[in-house]
Image 1: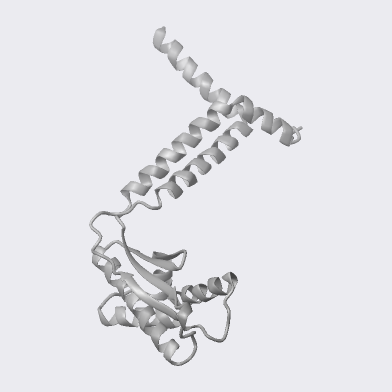
Image 2: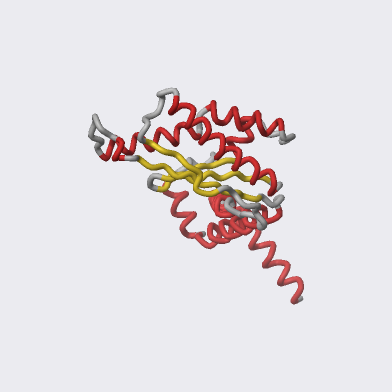
Length: 217
């Protein structure tokens, strides 16, 4: 009759065989690191946008800190808006860069630092990475200015290009940590599976032990 599964027994068994969990986790991490390095190189380009609230131009309202934060966040929403991204992709197509919406969203990232925004784009071609992120930054400012003229954005908010991207010369390995962590977790899972059936470990040890005895004999 098969033995009933006991979570407590499983945990104790895995703890007794802790060295198996450590070995499989380390092996998984090494495999993840190796995969991250043998993948095609990826180049990352960065452009920066500066925002500024001209408080001297505010006459009829008093902005709280929350209001200021929300106003700056409106720029972040614009950066990721369909209008901006659609314009970027249209210009990219005209420049013979075949990048669709899904690929763009996968290869880009944007981070806010206080009142400024850093735009990143990654690609296996450094020129493509540079071109895309610079298009993105320029189109954001152009559409911002148009929306401001049309009255959709407050006149006391400014948005300027802080810096456009230079051509990246060295690849980035920003996903190495993710690969290592994923590999280690998979290795840990493999270790748990192995320790859930101690007969696998015992049989492997017996085979190794017998081989050593045969060699000595």
